[in-house]
Image (cartoon, each protein chain N blue to C red):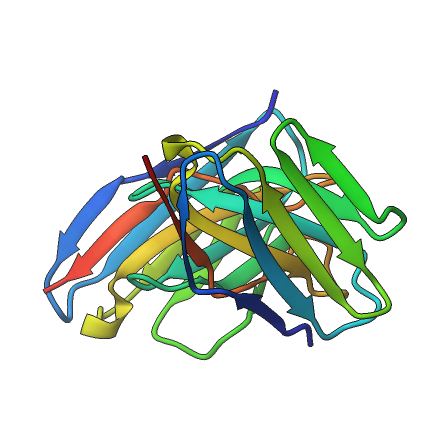
Length: 113
Length: 111
């Protein structure tokens, strides 16, 4: 089955700086990689995703890059703001079912003013 | 548009008591449905998934069970709760092009 590793576990950045979170996956057949943001006590919310036929996708201050050869993908947040503080999870689908997700362990991002 | 409802939002139950959490989806038919659990400060773990009425697959051995009595209803149950069952339980459904839309979650504390 799929194994997803996520680093770092915590990330502290100054407001306005960039944040980068990295994930690796094990199954070379995986073809969809979502990122979720979870605020304290709330459900995870999908913030961006990428499919295996593209190498990069951007949505305002958030971007995701994918390297299929190396089997890793990254989340980039630019010009961080205090409201970006949350736990971020990467995920990859287990290939036998589209909706079964294997999640990374999460990254606690703290943006300090 | 599709919506997913999950209740209750919070629950405190004594050890050994039964459990029933309900999840319903609106605006779609024959969805794939999932139950995830998140222990405090941890990632999400897939517990069960269902591709149709009466069809349940369990991902991890545990004290819980799931049922799908109707197309858009998914229920998580236990006959006797353990302390280790405490956590944040999330129901999710997947669409044709995107997985992982989560309900609001139920925070379960077993005391």
